[in-house]
Image 1 (cartoon, rainbow, N blue to C red):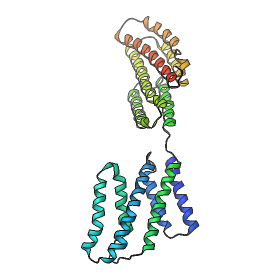
Image 2 (image 1 turned 60 degrees about the vertical axis):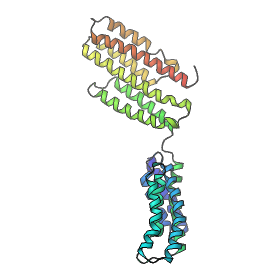
Image 3 (image 1 turned 90 degrees about the horizontal axis):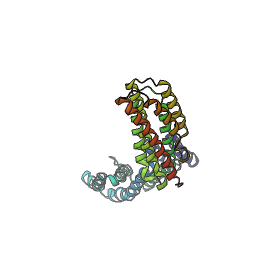
Image 4 (image 1 turned 90 degrees about the vertical axis):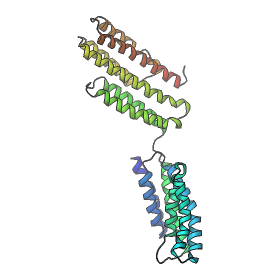
Length: 313
């Protein structure tokens, strides 16, 4: 909905400006606003790209004025037209090859051509030129303003949302069918870690623990799957104790990690390990025992990590 709100805000602002002023060039501003919003409203760095487009327009206006309103009225051949437009466009093309200034150079080339508008029967009108230039600035400016006002995702808020989603998936993992569960959980966690990595540089130092939250959540999910798979392979007669343990684990995960819940998994783990130690020894049973211990350790580490990130240690 944020994507649509960005575009709607920019569209309404320019439309109201057009209706209020009855300015003929406002139609061009509205068109450019719609183009910029359709391209960049869904981008997290839409405001930065919009500002790059604005810089390109500011470079194109004086260049196009010099070429289109001063040089071309004095020239009358196709070769001179190519010379007048070719040199700025060649420099713009060189800039487009550099990623750092690619957006600015692209905007410069596009708006340079639009402002000159080469035709067989050229019409040189300074008033029309400046009307078009103002419309470009207003159109892109309205889009950038909408991008600035409606932030797509605050990195800290986004990190909290990802933590809640991770806990929700861990809860579902206690009951989900094992067939396809590993790929389901792994794919979702990989996507979240990629998002956390993208936001990591933007986060303040205390909030960067969200990356550790993602890694610890992934570790707990892997160990939970490992435990359930080991018990399924062992075919051990512990279905009732296993269900009790998973139910208690589910309740703990629903509450989430906190510094005062570091030992919440200790008693359920001890009770379940007693049942596992009573079984005939086998590789699958030993793996299940190790998974229970690792789940307990990972949960304790996750809770201690919350304590450190909130400055309570």
